[in-house]
Image (cartoon, rainbow, N blue to C red; front, side, top):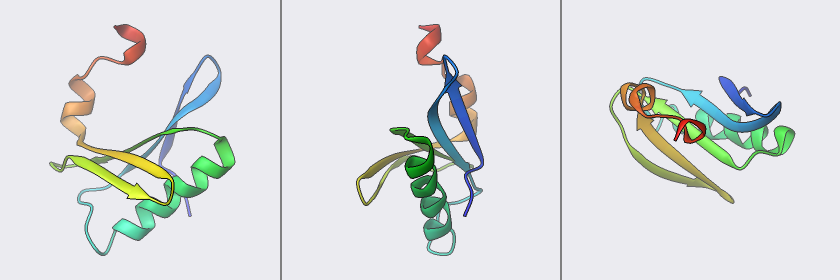
Length: 82
């Protein structure tokens, strides 16, 4: 299992991110498992799945995962920038 990338703040892992075209029955378990492993390994509490056009949230065990379109993520200022 893998996590696509991790965003660090002040040299520490802050957010684990998965990227997929669409979160569906076929991809869901793979994407969530990657975030679960990242949570355990990196001790991060922020999780995100970037998609083509889906938005919402997903629950996986104790993880609350934000889902959003990649274009929206690109255009949204970072919390550190606000």
